[in-house]
Length: 142
Image (cartoon, rainbow, N blue to C red; front, top):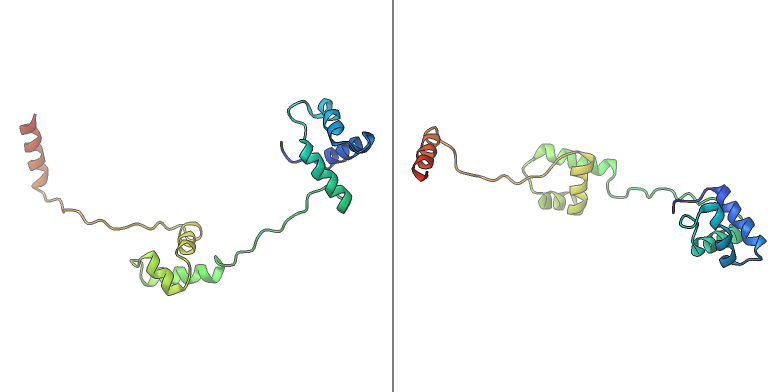
């Protein structure tokens, strides 16, 4: 079920006290209001009543977002400068130089700088005569 509005929580508190503090009776009384499958659970009713008794509040506490401690602007600038100096360096070696976790460096590269790390793979060089040789082999195989 989605989060309850303060009006719905007030309704739960009122019905709870009308039913002499019975969670089960409150749960049953909420069926016509919310419907059989959308009504709040008994545990949610208990939590709502516990919060109301302790804080006299019907709204959720707003939790401030956790502050970044590692992916700061300074760290992002240091990684960007390191990449400009040597773009071919490995993530593990760069993380050691910058004294940060490789996964943090990876997140900075991906999320903050929009870069993708890749490993260069050396393959055989194609020569002008290779196309003709492939065609000859294909005709022979058929």
